View 1: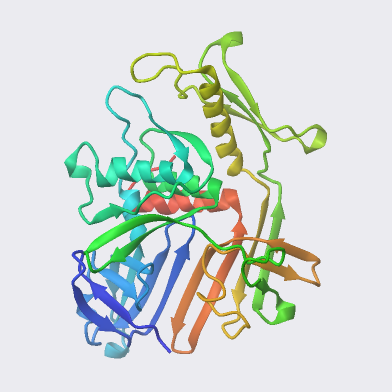
View 2: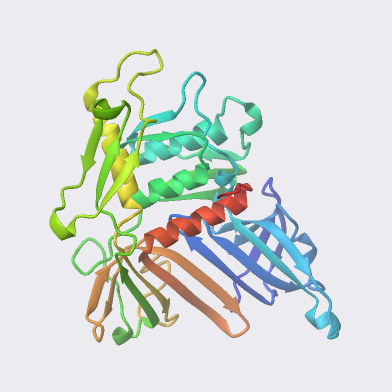
Length: 382
């Protein structure tokens, strides 16, 4: 059965409801953006509403919203039956990637300390919701109340893609981020989201175990690699020669120690009033910078798998994007607890299926996210 979709204008007026498309799949991403691809014959009713910048709302799921960014069509010798529109778009939260982080006047960097949620919402507020330059404001966007989730961090940003910064902070903290619809108030709501612990080692929630042996996984692909692995950061702040401030993050020794050097001259030692910042605060900022980099260079261990649609576990009820289940393959002697970082929902004539990614192949994931975000924002990366 195909999932009905609603087509909305940017002002969230409902233009049409469609359920007779040829095929559709979309990707929901915990740390990144997500995308949609839809095929529909151009002679189908309401196909003419699938215009650039209109929104696609999947079912009644206000967190499954995509903005159309691409349309194409071709005609071949088979005529009308194959005259299909190909529609592509990004998840609504891609709007965050349309801005860069602008530092405040008279300061080189936009520095923010606090819980990870507070820091993430700060950059969205400063660059999309309440920017100094009113032309940068996204009128429909609001920010949900700050619940101060995540660990306490210090973060600096300067002319970085806001979406990329959200992904970096999300990877480091495990928190997800999203932009959902508030149709009643005709607003887009930016918020931070948390996943549930569904592992076998906890008792708060019913555990979920994905395994071919338990008939809950159709296929699996496992990767474990240390090709890009680092676990100790030597972080260098301001100063020259022997006077330069150096902080080491990580305490591994011997063959288990993998070092990386991080140039962090941008970490300020004076505040906006040119007053010295306490040394302990500077050291904490350097430590946070090192940890953020190490979070991107952790050991790669991830699983991709196609979840059986008729498995014992019900999607979006027993488990969802961002949750942490246990994944097991007895024959491979692999058991790991890993977050569901990406879900692909596929709707075709033959039926509905789900593909999922568990855990993070971090260097590849970051590279993929940056590539997606550079396409969205029009940035050129060398």
